[in-house]
Image: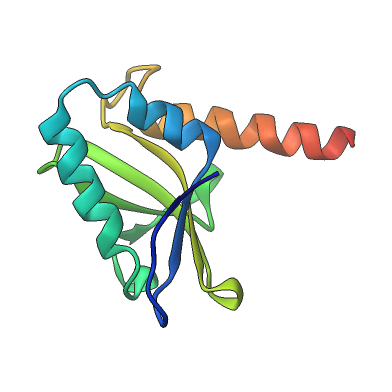
Amino acid sequence: MTEIEKSPGEYQVLLTLQASQLFAEIKDRREQALIIVRLEKLKHEPEKQGKALSADLIGYRSIRAVGQRYRIIYRVEPDKVMVIVVGIGRRKDGDKRDIYEVTKRFIAQMMSQRANE
């Protein structure tokens, strides 16, 4: 996991390997910079930001970045003072590359691997 530096009293923001790879696929450096700014904001009261997700993504939250174009999907672990980012990408409703669809597949795969252990 990739960590974004934190100060005392802030949440630690960690990116999963998948989130790091999705972030690296964003070619526009300005868009990357805006996403980093948004990730930095998650250090403060992340449970009050974005919206709670449902169905296959229950327990996760989503915030917008770069205007309306990107979504950051994350889970807050208050007991560990940690935010785990599992997806960063464009919202493309109905497209198999939509960040929600990509994240659902990733979480399903992760759960399957845990069940097989």
